[in-house]
Length: 423
Ligand SMILES: [Zn+2]
Figure 1 (cartoon, rainbow, N blue to C red):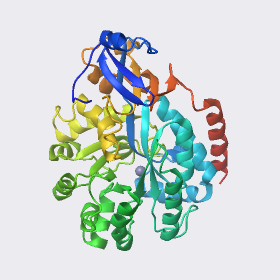
Figure 2 (cartoon, rainbow, N blue to C red):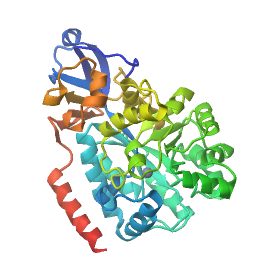
Figure 3 (tube, rainbow, N blue to C red):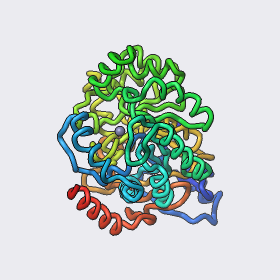
Figure 4 (spheres, rainbow, N blue to C red):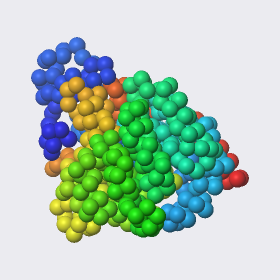
């Protein structure tokens, strides 16, 4: 991933404590560090941990609860009424733990979360050992979590105060979407982010209906409204960005903002096709996200890489659009940059955090290998992930997660599903 497009054969990654010390040919590393503990990964591809830049982790407990509906119907008739009754601190704790189990074993080492009760999500992620960028919900509608905009803010800032020094935790301010953010709330974003050093994570121009409604009500697209209040910039990442016009794309590019492409969710909810090739050509940083398990229904970054690469070609009418290396970059450095972590994760270079994934290339469907990057995007899936380290901790060993009790997660997910069914 860094340097871009380079494959290093027969190399070793040398890790000390939580960081990468060196990346060197194996023989050289063995000579320089003779006392090091060695994990033999012959026959594996070693990559940076994947970054899921947009999800609602706790919604894993609603996986498969409401399928085959349009976004608005799905949200208003099924998801929101159920959330209003079911979502508590305990729901978020259990749902996020389930999500961390799924993501970790699939090679995702960082995720950007947007949900209610962020304190419980952070505690679950920290316990699993996954890196979380917690979106502090900033809504104008009452939920089970908070009643007023001020209460959302004060609860969020309390959580921020409690966790801001944790090495695996970073924060964003998370208005649900631009169309649902009032002009008054919009104008506060810049000052809040400056004061508390937060990024901004929001749903951005996901459906044409939303864009039309926002233009009717406010006279501008979401991107233009954000620009008008100076809320764009390198700390901003907008999820989806499906319906962006040329002016929106130009603004995102020149402000250094990021778009999180969520191809599976966009396809399943029939939201449309994000202009990924145009975004990349304009110089916009593009990350990848799964969205929540209620609209995907997998928290599987391998599926997103492959779908992003093949879909972009069809949308652009160009088979050269989003080549394999580019899809891999979106799932690693693209996400790291969106989350403000580009100097810490997203690639395997000395000085960065040791967030590392090893993938076995030994299945019947994976032979032969000409280009490892091509295999990562077009051939392999999350079942090929064997080992995962986050900050140097070996969290997945030979396919098994060492920090999450899978049997307990399955039992609690079944109990929550019974509860949701009975509502
Ligand atoms: Zn979403």
